[in-house]
Length: 242
Image 1: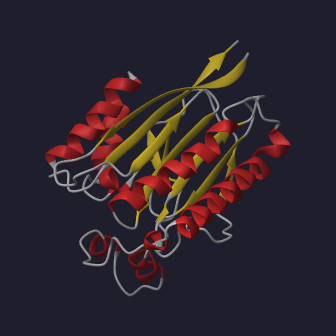
Image 2: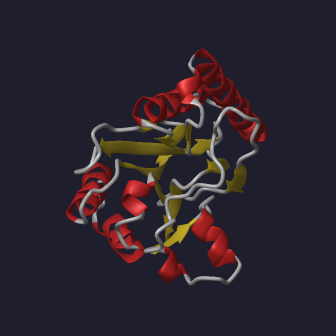
């Protein structure tokens, strides 16, 4: 028996935005969330380019090739965004976050790639851990001790992203982990994490065994909090498979 991913994605425009600029992929080997930025059409295009570049990785990948595969797809996404800006200079400044998780074909290792302020959380043994660090101005202030994490959650510049896929070469932050049966992963755009408290997210991950019901519960919590941004969540369980 080897470990497999069983995943569900839900994406919602929210209550304020006129369109949904998030893009998402949830498959048996690959999870990915991209949150576009840089204007209505351009943000939507940037996140779409990122997911189109990375979704071919949803295949059986050798353990030793996980990070290289992710970096290759991210390079392809950057080139696609660069080409889209060249086609229309009004798209200058467009970009997207990307948080992606790739499970090895053996089920013995997974790699997490991250750039921007979408997030990945791992629920293991009843404890939720945030495994990504926001590439944002306010996170930089927290790291420097200028403000507290509590102050960051309401800071007027909390939406300022310091690193994203914008057409230039970028090396995401990579994390590799050994998965365990029973692990539950959450990948989400900041439309969830900016408005729903971490303890409420953890409560939903713990309290809804069915992944589809859990994903919908998380979206509903963000909508109840005002839904000021697009909301995208992927809930994935690590299970024993044939």
